[in-house]
Length: 42
Image (tube, rainbow, N blue to C red; front, side):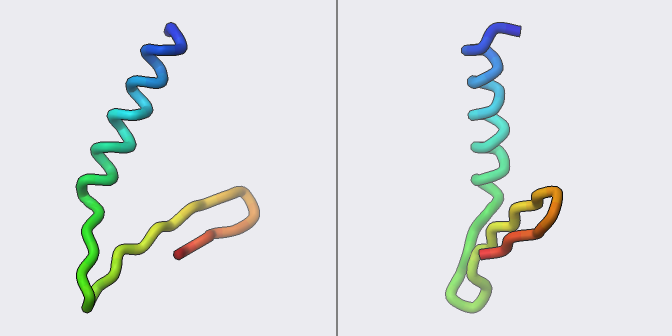
């Protein structure tokens, strides 16, 4: 797979995920990142 095609697919995947994330005052948005050792939430 060409690098530019792969980059485009990654962008699309990110956008699909991002458009679902919404936050309100009562329920702020939350970002979760998993690594091999830890889970980061902000």
